[in-house]
Amino acid sequence: MKQDKINKYNFYYYINAEIEKFLQHVSLNYSARLTKSEINRICQIIVNFSYHSLLKISAKIENIQDSLNFCEIDEYIQVDNLKININKGVFKLNLKYRIEIVFYSITYCFYALKNMIKGFLFGYKEKKTKHTIVSDLAIHQYYSNENIKELKNAIDADRFPLLKEADYILLKSKVFHNLKFDNLSFYWNPIFGIFSEIKWNVLDLIYLSFSLFFFLLKELFFIFFSESRFLLLEDRVKQQIVSFLTKFDLIEYFIITNSECISQELYLSNTPNKNFKTALVWYSTNSKLFKYKKKYADPNETSFPWLKLINVDLHFIWNLDQKNWLVDLGSQSELKIFGPILLENPYKKADSNIFNEEYFNIIIFDVTPVSPKFHATFFSHSYIFYSLENTIKIINDTLDWAKNKKAKVYMKNKRETTEIHSREYAEFIEKCIAQRQLHHINYDISIDFILDSKVDFVLCSPFTSVSNFAAYHQKKSAYYDPVSVLECNFVLENNQFFLSGKSELHDLLDKQYLEFLKKEF
Image 1 (tube, one colour):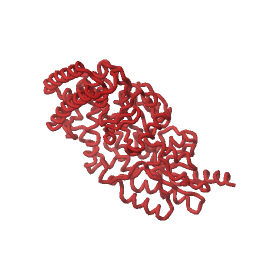
Image 2: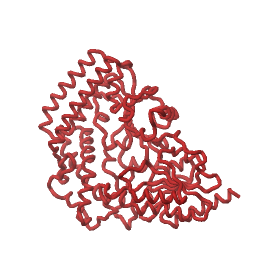
Image 3: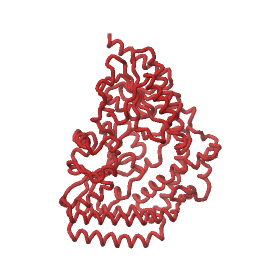
Image 4: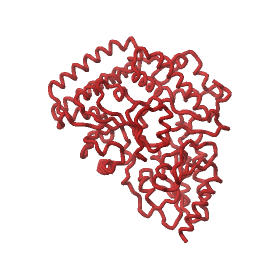
């Protein structure tokens, strides 16, 4: 490793390279006793536990040149519930985690049987019913019990892949657990939901009870001779339960989102007699890591290690650029371009007069900065690029341009502000709103509604997906880098721009404003 070349801009390149080497060692060490899917899953679990822990370890080292020295030491490092030796590609589970794995594995069996008994007594579906299981879409941010019909309307309008044609849809949601509407059912665990809805007979109940009992006995014996087998116990139990459901051909699709691509459980890819398909729905395009200019970062291109561990049958993506990116990562799955996919309520509208028809209307889609004490590391993009200073500069540079012009500047938060977000930023926004320089739009208002309104220009922090969505709506939009440190590693659509620095922003806004004035007169 070229220690002298590490800086805050290329740090991700070096740590990702070290973790990828570690995962290659893990794969080689366990290839003789595990299947490819099992090795893949172990790598996912390890990355899930270790990535942020390693970032925190490196952040504590004062000299950035020495921040990754721990990767070269031949000893175990504590990362959450594991100890890993990065040099040798081996790991150990701590006692607490072992107890948790056994407990949750037994509990999972208990819940499967409990819900099967519920289905035996009160089930209302035949065993030939097909189900589409959907991971948590965080719909509680945009829907309530009172307006859940709007979610059904959005599905019927084909706003989300695969769901319009589905017979029965089971969505993961703790908030809406046990809610049913039309062909939608909500459960904290949709697999248990299937067990509770199907009308089972006594033989089914006996078969699952005995098969789980003997499976657990066997696994609980062998796990004490193998760290890898212990780590996969919970996954294997879930795999056994899903395998039972596949005997009746009850599942058509398992749908996950890019939020869950790092925790793709074993049953999704390695269930015996698998007769369902798995789909990953990308609700954003910004999973590419930033590419800084060569003078700041060399090498300057990298990707998160877990993106190469995704194993699904098909992806639903936004555009050709995203497709080519997945191919470059090594994806061999079917890639379907669906267009923009947003997890929002498209029927949530604001006042129809929110945008003044007589003004040049600019809307900023910001990324709210996180308070420093909540950062995993001071090398993250959220700390380096989405800093308080940079995010305020995006707003101020736009407001500076709008002075003495027939223009209005609006801002929409990406999501609800919480305690982890910068209080200073919130106070700055409140001050701008109070001075009537800035007009605020609530985070839950539909982006569709906004882009169908009288919006003349859309300005986004790099590389938020709304810019692509705006281009899809034939709106002029731009990614704006206020400090001129980034290269654009996204293919731009028509009417889409990448702006580096205040002068480029003002030049483009001048041009768009002139076109607006010509139309006015």
